[in-house]
Amino acid sequence: MTDGCREAVRVEELVLRAADRFPGLVPGRDELAAERELPQARKRGAEVEQGRFLSRVLAHPRAGLHLVHAMLRPRAESLALLDEFRRTGRADLGEAAVERRGAAGHVELRNLRFLNAEDDRAAAALEIAVDLVLLDPDCEVGVLRGGVVDHPRHAGRRVFNSGLNLTHLYHGQISFVDFMMARELGLVAKLYRGHWLDGDFESGIEDTVEKPWVAAVEAWAIGGGCQILLVMDRVLAERGAYFTLPARKEGIVPGASPRRLTKFVGDRLARQAIMFERAFDPASPEGRLLCDEVVEPGAMDEAIDRDAAQLVSSGVVSAAANRKAIRLGEESVDEFRRYMAMYAREQSRCMYSPALIRNLETYWQAQRRRL
Image (tube, rainbow, N blue to C red; front, side, top):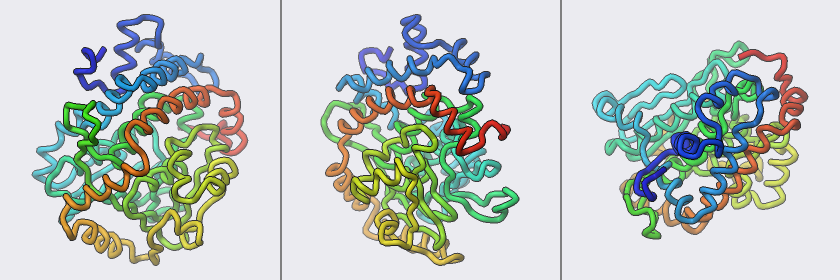
């Protein structure tokens, strides 16, 4: 399927190639399309087979590392947009946008109707935006921020990230591969590790091209939004904002957060956050473990500009080298690969557990919400 690990194949394409080459191993295009038309509770659970398959691929040291490497390469859509972005300094990707301002690439989540929650399209748009920042030599630092939403209760306010779109999940519109797997192996991994452009994925060296990132949290960072903070180099939070990882109420595994959160807040607080919905106020002693600075309302733009400039004041090469050195002591690519092997299996099971539907109806009243 990958010509003996010589062809870089993204996870979305890999499962389709597996279905074509080995009928019955994983669901094919037609079955997946049919399942997509059903609410989550009525699906057969064909994606569980994808989870088992990807778990075995990732558990294999060579095949798994090759897949991680493939997902750290720029998307084809990003390469197609690069020349235009370099010329104009901006790209509107629908659910996300990116703009170069000085030496900083500003990425905004703009899934405004859903308070900047993430779904299949939003995650893909964010990944393309991140690709463009990483690919553009004129962008030395990345900034991640939520756009101004138009929800009646919060109109005119920036919202960093409302996490997984639970309404889409309940109605069967969140893909296990395109969202759950591609987001962790693609979007979040690129924020954490950058691009891995070298063709030698077995060298034992993380030969990545990466840039430092600043997160600017206004309103809240829920679920997947909080997950992203764990891979940022600098986290600014508006006074009054909060962070939370309500994984138990959602009934899913919150990405790689169970692995990463403990290094910030310790095991006990991590369990409280993931299993007991503990929220973090950025101004609290516990919240400061996840946040570098609490910013007064109206002062975020100035704080972003200041910190973005400081991150690259000694050169982007030095900043990238130091973030890489810090990361190597925290989470090797091989450790990430092994974690994702577990995640693929367990997350696919969670998505088709009766408890997930019950949780969405109990805590989210999802049965009353429409797409």
